[in-house]
Length: 310
Image (cartoon, rainbow, N blue to C red; front, side, top):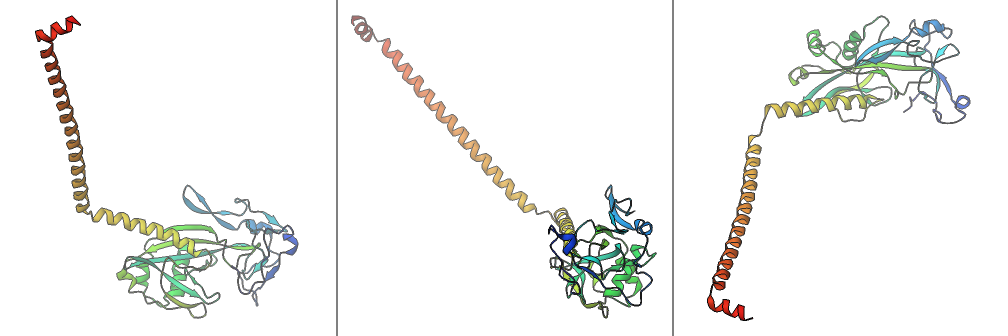
């Protein structure tokens, strides 16, 4: 996937990659405070943070600690992208985003609050960049409110964001804005709410950013890596629903039918067993009767004399 403003990306497996890879930067004018100057020092950049997982917990570590390579004083994306420069991104190396996934069950199908992006015309998870000095938890709430429900009652937002689960924290490899010199690090947090609360949210698209906002079923093709995040969430939620259903609604008729079948099979085995036993008993009695007859005949004097003459 490529951003519509970018030139065509080159083949990352081309042996002449370093020579043919296109360069593109579209910096903002006038230059905002948060945009990196071209001569930013390597020492400053080494202190930039990336997400790292340790003991199933996400934490931030520096580029230096993460052993990110540098070239000409700038950090290099660990993954080739087919284009150099910062693209439309403002910083060298990682820039941090936060993506809140708010889900709800409707008619036993899982939906999430999705936005139709203005720039690429694709459905996506709402979210955005973490402001300087801002905690990502505040970013999650701020971006959700700005992009999906501007002006919403704060008490409703308090309920939505009362608890969450981190689904992913790390590099966004398939974002169309990513380049060899600048990439996005995101944290994806899942919030599940009940239908009663979902129906209270007044969904309003953000002017200039989103074309539309609505509840979108979780099996849709989405922007960047968003489909992967939704797949993780859907698998988890459908599994929980299955377990909950199994625990709360036991179908005893199934156990009754299984019991009846087992009784039938056991009865059939017993009948076959006793039939074989009776048949064997009859055969033994017949053989004993034949033996008695033989002995009786042998005790007959006429037969004995005839046997002796021979």
